[in-house]
Amino acid sequence: MNRRLLALIGLGVLLVLAGCLGGSGPSGEQLREDADYDWNTSANGTLQLGGDSYTAVYEIHNTSQLDLYQRDTFNNREPLPISALQFRYPNGTVVDASAFDISTNAERIRLEPPNRTGKIAYSVEQNGKAVQTATFVDGSYEVVLPPNTDVGVPILSNVAPGGYETETIDGQVHITWNDVDSDELVVEYYLERDLWLFGGLFVLLVSVGVGGGLYYWRQIRSLQDRREEVGLDVEDDDLDDRGPPPGMGR
Image 1: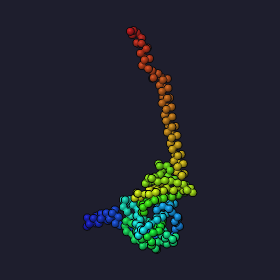
Image 2: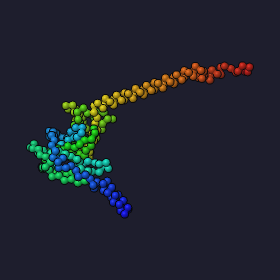
Image 3: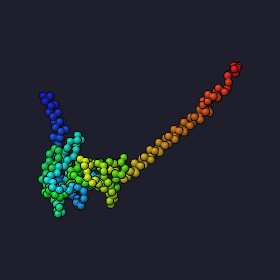
Image 4: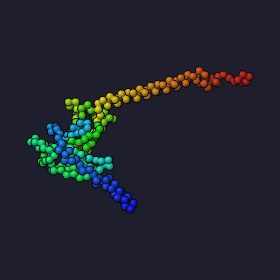
């Protein structure tokens, strides 16, 4: 009996690790949430980062379906937890998630838009100052950072793939790729105040290091002076010049 129970538990663990018991994806209520999107985008894929969430707008051409997913801790695919799904027709008409045919399994959420050409937009919760997403469409990409953030210092940020350009427009950094050939985008940014904090910490560490080195050098000099005062630093040549002890001639 115990062996059977252990076998069932082991099978359940394997199924979870394989992604067979993955999440069910976003609910219909989440998909129909309201949101305002900037449809005036020029890239094939545009991500607008907001700190606690980001929006994505993808331009599609002759596309019947779009599979959205993310990677879990074990690098398995699972449905991307999107919300506020919308579609914009080429004539400017915007419809919500009810116009899509949507299906979900353990690995992805599949969107079938009401038209093969147009723009798809959705929102995703964001954790921390980093975004990692698969490139769901081919072509150009643009990522717009929140105000007062940057990626200019490599030690505090990370952007992949390479070959990108940055430009500041109305106080926000725009990262653009003319053509992305990678399977995913990674953007890790920092607050501008973090740069000042990091700079201050660096100056403090340098000051402590210099001060400690100076103190150590002074201690060594002081010890050398004391040794000289008690005659411990007498040269060997000086000893040879003194001659033999009294009573012992050469």
